[in-house]
Image (tube, rainbow, N blue to C red; front, side, top):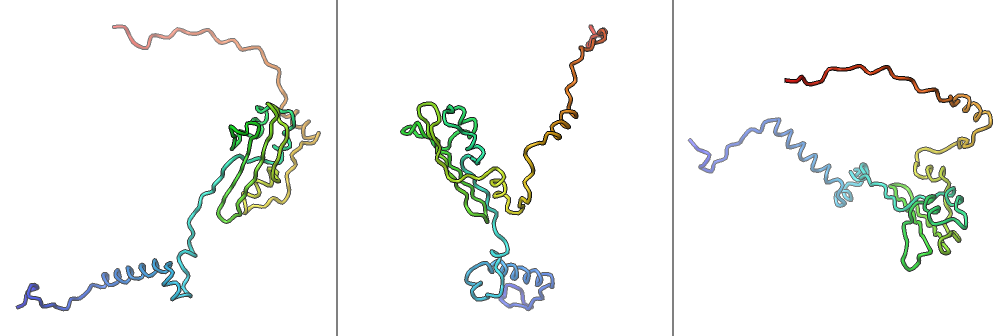
Length: 196
């Protein structure tokens, strides 16, 4: 009789479940290696995992969004505070160029070209003197550039007609304030805690 410690190997029967598990592990290893360049070159008909699944990249926005409407609202002679109210705080200010504010906007989204725009505001003392800028999009154009799936077919009207204004005023008539109601006399309630 031989024992296992004698060095004799007996042929063992591998259970079918273990054979199936081993085959699945080998198949999964081959699929995971299909993304490697060496295996992909040898098996060009097999699609790579990288072509089927792409990682998500977050949107990167830097700076202030300045639209054409905002730039048109600026007028020479405005104070720095008025400019800041319209455009927000500038991205770049310099101690050496105290009379210049720079607004730089960049937006990077996966699958879309990089958006980059610059706007420079020049002051003379404390008032706005002039503006230099790239071509700025309108608000609707900017929103449309962010959403590449939805295209705006017709721009909704942004101005109400006289009839719409009258109908709005009639629906929302202001009622004259009424005299305040008098409250009923207060009643006396027993104390919450009883005296001991």
